[in-house]
Picture 1 (tube, rainbow, N blue to C red):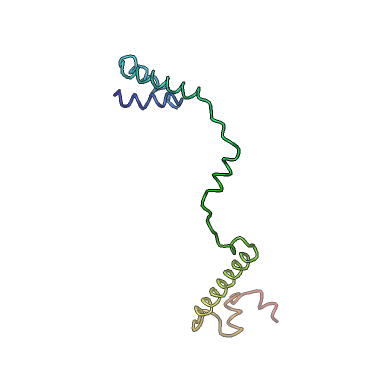
Picture 2: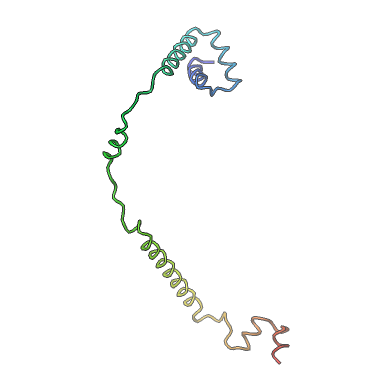
Length: 137
């Protein structure tokens, strides 16, 4: 194992994220490499010093002071009013339904895909041997 890889594994070991197989390989490297042992010792010392540090007590007003200094973004007000949002959504649905109806009508204009009279409509819909003919009498 190279020392560069060992240094990365030392960091993972201190964070308790090193797998068992890599931990064994790291231990074998540390037994042979005095410079990596020194890196491990200094990293452990730094970690223990950082854990001993006390978290500073921030004044209660600091949170509100930071939030008040943040830039305010202006959003369109009509989006926050539910009545207008529902109206806009309803209008969009109605327009899409009208457009779909118009496209459907234009698609069937001049087409012979539908029956021209009532008799053809019955045969197209139900066929020649349908029950509708029995009840038609």
